[in-house]
Length: 86
Image 1 (cartoon, rainbow, N blue to C red):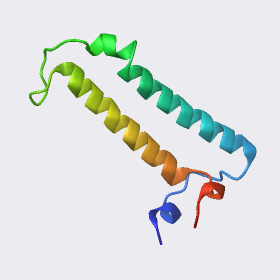
Image 2 (cartoon, rainbow, N blue to C red):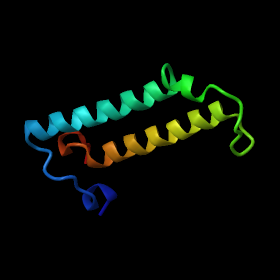
Image 3 (tube, one colour):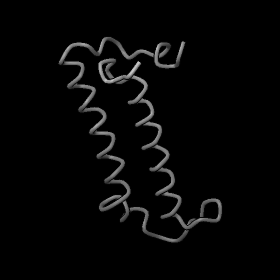
Image 4 (spheres, rainbow, N blue to C red):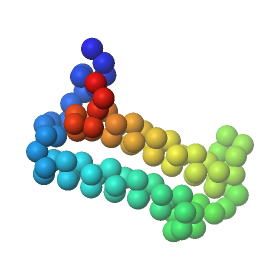
């Protein structure tokens, strides 16, 4: 049994849930993208404080890349079963 069979996010077979799924994934991607470019980079565009020896802006980008990766991984796990090659 794979992780896809263990984790479920309700029934994603009907069109309403697929639309909600698409909106959530698109919103998450948009939020992460805006946090890494304008206007989010304006908030973090400074050298101090340093985090793990990195300027704050680099740490900001790394944080948002991790958030983006985890969100896209979660979207992959709960995506509608019709898109899987199982």
